[in-house]
Length: 75
Image (cartoon, helix red, strand yellow):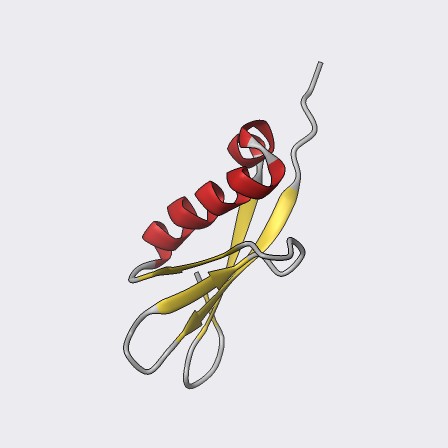
């Protein structure tokens, strides 16, 4: 039997100091901060686990959307 996998869009907003504000817009309160996209994905999965549970976070597919001071680019 296949497990249900939920896909979450993860938004990375680069600030003027080089840090990313990392959020899952569809999950209120799921926010963290990171220096790299890789680190942000790890940390936002931890934040998701606190809100939705370890099982949900472990099985979630995370799709990164990176935006900066200029224009959006793929993660």
